[in-house]
Length: 318
Ligand SMILES: [Zn+2]
Image (cartoon, rainbow, N blue to C red; front, side, top):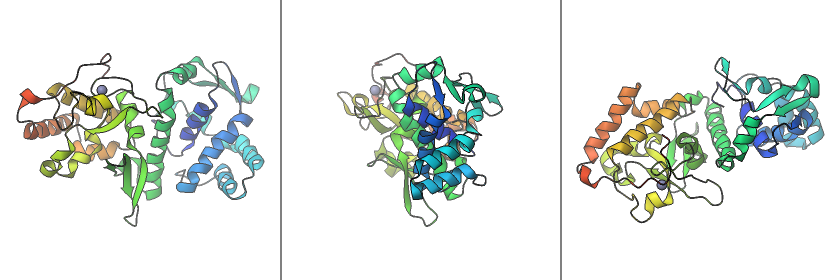
């Protein structure tokens, strides 16, 4: 999903595989993958008619038709014949070369399907597995929102609604459009951990996650709307944010400021849909971005003796 993203097929395939949750070594036949894969695209087409940046082919037309006639057999037939042409080969390719891990082997020629690898099982059994589906969905929403607004995915300009926990943008008519939950959009860039104490975060029903402004939201009167930028939003466990000796409106230590810089560089390095937004907000080069954070810190942290930092609850991983 870190690739060029000229169509949303990779998001749909990732979602379908996570949903089917096959075991290592299992053969997933195209005919079994097709209904799950295609219906996720059909679902997204309802909200965002543009799911591909080139001309619609037979497969996309079939997904559109399915939303009208609900004819699943017809959808599956077209998907098996045309729907996987670009995605199964491309899934593991980012830029010009394949990624380090393969989640399946292509056995379309011999067995009309794909064979799941150990790498996929490791991912699907990991602690963060339950968050993955929401992360894929968040990323898909960001990319398709950009396409449907007619801008490059890297130029999508978003804002954060703190009360609703939503990332939103404005459509051509300057109407507000909610894009995705900010928690899901931020989680992958902290390796699924609380920004401050590294405890594991859970996005599902047992959610223990707050979206926190690193530089407290109350500084908006002094710093302006820059405080609501993605660069200043981190995911925090509830204890760190507002538990006993939690952060509340305090400003963190310089060590944590350095960690914020590291986290923001994860976005920049990953070709995230909000990459350009982040660069616009904080600077073009890494040293510009570091300077940006340092200058804000000097303006607002007038007494370093009161700087806040919690005890670590797990090993430091970034
Ligand atoms: Zn924490």
